[in-house]
Amino acid sequence: MVESTLKKEKKTTKTRVKKEEPISKLRIRVMAYESKVLDLSVKQIIDTALRYDAKIVGPIPLPTEIKKWTVNRSPFVYKNAREQFEMRVHRRVIDIINPSPKIMDSLTNLSLPSGVNIDVKII
Image (cartoon, rainbow, N blue to C red; front, side, top):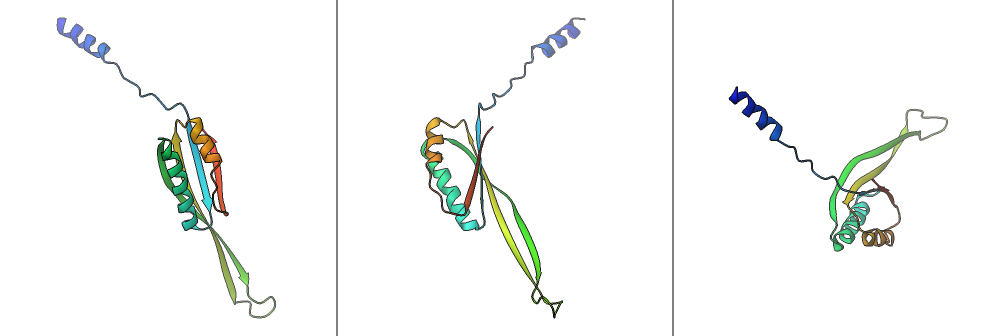
């Protein structure tokens, strides 16, 4: 009997420690048609965030979206002659954990090249 009560005490004394979740997270999705321009703008965003000692996760490359169109070369004759066009959209995701107001201000004042789209969400 004594052994069974000791086993019960050992089971009840174990406590699980939960890790504290971050208060907020800033998720930045960057999209562009050219991968080189995209990588330069992502590097610029990361350098700006690191300047203010932010904790960064990423850049995480997302799958490239490829849109294809097939068009007849000639409208009347030569129906078998066709051209294919494609448009590629490259995407990256950057997460900044617990951003300070200074980081938010510096990212909003950041000038990026044309053709780069940015979506910012606070989670």
